Length: 408
Image (cartoon, rainbow, N blue to C red; front, side, top):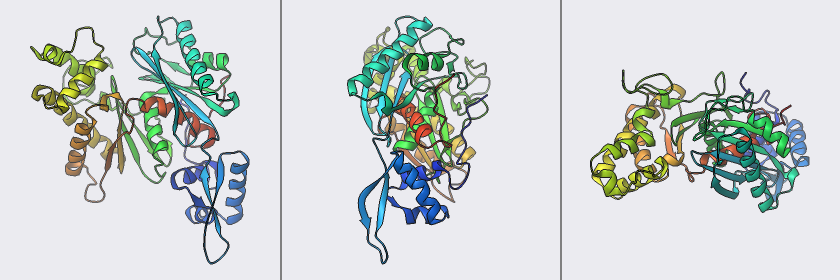
C-alpha cells in the first residue's frame, strides 16, 4: 500500500497555513485570512500553535496600515533539520538542510564495500552520525532522515527493490533497520520524487502552481506537485518518464519494454555510444575504467567547449528529453518545470534551451500560458537535498508530505 500524501484535509489545516507562509512569507495574519477565506480567530489559533511549536516565528517587522500594525510571519529556519542521503552507483551523498531548505552540511563518501545488508545499514548509519555529530546538531532537532535512490521502491515497507551497484535486496527493510539503529524516523523514496519536493520546497514555489521536475542521473525520472503535494500513484513509483517508448520496437530495456527514452537519452547510453565511436573516447580522454557518471561529465564538457561530435550526442539527448518534457507538460498542464540531477550538472544549459524552445512550439496550452523552465541551482545534490525536504515537509506540514514517524 502506498504512503498517502493528500493536499490539506480542510481549509484550516496546519499544512495549508505552513505552505502559505513558506511560499509567501513574510506574510501577515490578515493576508492569511484573505488568502484562505478563514476567519481571523481561526488563523490566530493556527498561527499561535505553530509559534508555540517553533515552526513559525514573528519577524519583528511590521507593516503600517490605517489600523493596527501588522506583524509579519516567516518559517523558523531552525525549527528542525532534515537529513537526506542519496545512494549513487559508488558513492553516498549526505546533505543536511534547515526548515526552509538551506543546506547546512554536506558529505560525500564511498558506498558500501560489499552488498551485504548489514554493510549497507552500517554505512548509512555511520554517515548519518558522522554528519550530524560533526555539525553539532542536538538529536531532538533532527526531524528524520530519507534515503533515496533510483527505485523502484516499496515505500510502505521502507525497501528498495534494488540499489545501484549492489545486488537486489528486496527483503532488506532499510527504513526499519535504520530507525532501530539511529532512533530517528527514516523514509525510503526515489531520487526523482525527492528532487521534485526539494526543488518545490527550496524555491518557495506556491502551492497554486502545477510544478514539475525532470530528473536525470543514471536513468530519467520525473515528479509533479499538485496543490502542494507530490503525486505518487498507486505504489509511490509514479513519474517514470524514462520508460516512455520513443522508438517503436527499439532497443530492449530492463523494464521489459523496448525503445524507452532512457535507452537513447540517458547518460550511460550516450557514454556507451561515445566509447563505440572510433577515436572519440581516446580524444576526449574517456578511459575504459571510468565510471559512466565521470565519462558523461567529460562528454558534456566537451560539448560545451565546442567539440562537434560530443555536441551532436548531447543535442540528440536534449531533443529526446524535450519530447518527454512536452509529454509531461501536456499531461499535467504544467506552468513550472525544473531540471535536476547529476546528468544536468555540466551541460544543463543545452537541455534547458532545447526544452524551452520545444515547449514554446508544441505545448498544448502554449496559447493560454507559458511553461517556466529552469535548471536546479545544485543539480548534483538535488536528490539528497530533496530527501531532507521530504522529511521536513512531512514533519512541519503533515498532510502535504509523508507522515514522519518511526516505523514499528
